[in-house]
Image 1: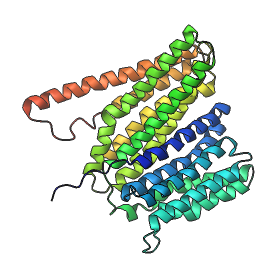
Image 2: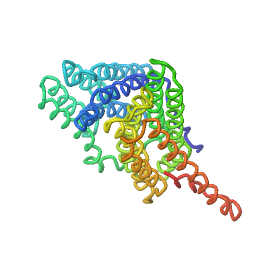
Image 3: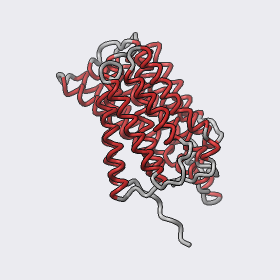
Image 4: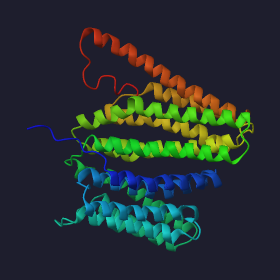
Length: 384
């Protein structure tokens, strides 16, 4: 029998993603207003439901044929709930808590209907936990105020994150489409990178285009391109290869997609906030908050490749971890030099990383090409 065609991303999924461009922007706005550790924690607590809504919809689309009128309307309805989340984010800890919690419960119930509509008994999985545990917790948090709201929402976010780990034995026999998920999660990463460029452009266009601001804008664009290169030149193929050869798909999906890509996106959001601060005043020294988000975001992004590569192949990505260490070496000097200098240093580190990996890949492929054809998968995991 001929192999089944690869599952492709549907137009409805791409349209659904547009809501999350807005949502990522709203999370970045929270960090703009509060750079403290407490502010970072509060932003993470409300971002996890946003992320989990997108992940749940993507997993559902991977396992089902969603290119039908019924499922398209269902995805649009989930998008409506996600839009409510995004609208509530700026005031989630103030007067929009109920909108935030209610929107999440609504979309989780819609997802549960889509997943369990062919009634054969409701099973215990992330969809049922979201509908009947974390959704109600977020709604209760929206009705509470102050510390009780934060505690309830933190408990809900933690529950969502640990559920796949606790139920991993139930997912061991589930097979997923190996092409669809890498494409979907790569698209979300592009959403986050694109949102960082939107922020940079908005800040740059809001004031006079001085030489310093133009230079910072170009450097910010170069950094975004370099971060894109780190992921999509080698890592994207490595993730797909890991899915194709994995005996248990869930052992790739849970650590690499659900957790690893959450860290990737968090790092990019931090970078986006730091970039907007730098472009706004390139000659000013960054405070510890913006500097930590810019430098720490880059370091987190690169270090996460060390985690994902180990989980996929049991190997250590020394180049990416060295790049993360190089970013952190910039942090002690971030308060002593203008923000533009910090930004240029990060560009130098990431470009050097990409150049080094390109040389390593070329040197390792040449002997293989001379001796025998390279085996499938050789080299794709080198840098991931």
